[in-house]
Length: 189
Image 1 (cartoon, one colour):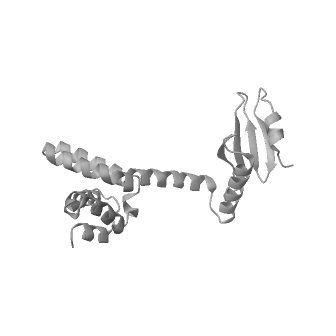
Image 2 (tube, one colour):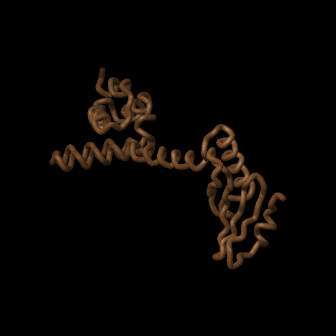
Image 3 (cartoon, helix red, strand yellow):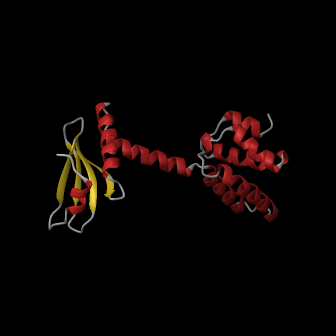
C-alpha cells in the first residue's frame, strides 16, 4: 500500500528500525533516534539484495523519493546498478570540482609563489584571475569555450591574454583537460 504524508508524520520511533513500504522497493526507515530515511531495496544483477539511500525525510519529500525510485528502477532496467552509478556520479563531480578554472588557477598561483616570482607579477596575475572568477571560476576548465575566455579578456583588454594562456599551459602540463583550440586562441595562433 502506498504511503501518505500523514502516515509518515504520524509514525513514531520505536526501539528498532521501523520500515514503511511505499511499493516498488521504496521504504522509509524510521530510526530509533527519530530520524526518517528513504531507501530503495533492490536486487543487483547477481540477485543479491542491495539498498540505495536517497536521503532524509522531510528534506526529501514523498513525491521526490518516488521520483528517485523510478529513476533508479530505470537504471536497473538498463542493466546499471544504481549504487555504482551514484558512486560514479560522485567521483565525476569530485574530478570536475578539482579541475575548475578557479582550482587550477589557485594551484598555478601557488606554483608561481614557490618559484619566487616577483610580487608585482603575482599581484597582476591574482588581479586578472579575480576578475575572471565570477564569470568562469566554478566551471570545469574542460568545458570553458574559447568565446567565454575571449569575452572575459575583452572586458580587460586583450593585452592581458598572456597570463590566462600561462594558466592553460599549466593546466595541460598537469594533465587537466583543455581544448587545443582554446590553447591556440589564447596563444594568439
